[in-house]
Amino acid sequence: MRKRYEVAEQADKRAIAEFLKHEGQFLLPMVALVERAELAIDEVIEVVGRATIEAVLDMSAEALAGPKQAGKTREDRRAGWYGRQGGQVYLAERKVHVERPRLRTKGQGEGGELEVPAYLAMRRPGPLADRMLEILLAGVSTRRYGEVIPEMADTVGVSKSAVSRETIEASERVLADLMERPLDAMDLLVVYLDGIQFGSYHVLAAVGVDTEGTKHVLGVREGASENAEVARALLEDLVARGLDPARRRLWVIDGSKALRKAIDQVFGPQPVQRCRNHKLRNIVGHLPKDQHAQVKAAFRAAMKLEANEGEQKLEQLALWLEREYPSAAASLREGLKEMFTINRLGLPPRLRKCLGTTNLIDSTHSGVRQKTRRVTNWKNGAMALRWAAATFVETEKSYRKIIGHDQLWMLKAHLDDLEPVAEIMKAG
Image (cartoon, rainbow, N blue to C red; front, side, top):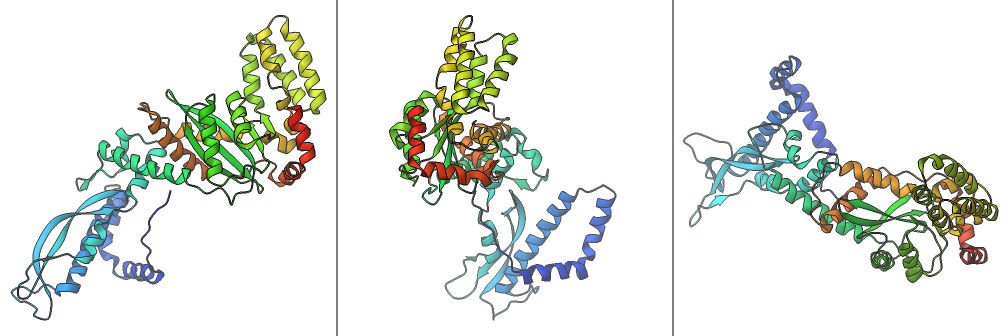
């Protein structure tokens, strides 16, 4: 998320530090209260912050009207003091009540109120909406938002409705930024496609890996991965934003036939690796529990073999299952050749571990679920899409390079060599 910052010069910071060191006697009573646990440190910050703001406002007014002098007027100034009035300024993630000075202009035909420059500057909204979104993504529900704001009578603007409005605005900006990301500068070798569910709504997501092993969230689309139109719309959007459709990449998908069809339609023949974890869950879903351990062991062992030998072993397993569990055998045979795409590419075992499943994007889903665990009412698909975008982008900040990233040059060499890739796609 983009943030706006007011930048202070280093000299300004040093001057403030020197002032507090030499003239900080006014803080000593507060220090004593903190030490005796009678005043929380956040309340100290609140009190000092409010007092500092009001002092800055007074100094800004003095620059226009001069120091206050009872019963006297300053003819050399264009403004005069006109009492005080309550006001609001932004402080961190909240708005705070302050007492502000008022000024009036002087001279013939004038007499209107003159704004204090510092007050005008402090009235400008800071990154309030973005900060609210960060707090909610950290797992604080809207109902409990007030608990992360100091319980001060001066604090305003933290109602549930205000938080909801600010959060929607912030998440809409995040979604727009994500869906406008240019992709032409990314040399992506691998693209992962998988779906996640929010209540009764589905969101399809794409995450890419470049030649250095760095992961990038590419886009999201509301709808299930089994929906070919949704999958095609997402892929066409990636192309529109600069993903070269002529570049050969490895596509890792959850096994959805709709995703496989969409890849062919938008990018043409491409090497596709079916997620082995999804396939194994589908197979054991057709079996009684007492058969799970044996089938899992046989399946995982076959994945470590060369492609042809591994397929033969799993075909033997399918023949054995077919006698009593024909649906499990059919599930095993469906898309079997694309379970061994990375084996046919001759990639080392450490790199296969990451490319053989959609765990990379599943781990992102885990972060997304953690950040949305307090959301209990998914109103519509638009809400699910906004939250998906916000949480994916937030989770992206903690991405690390993939396992075996130093061996990705081998994958790139195979993808650039058209003949072996053509044979792999024909076999698949």
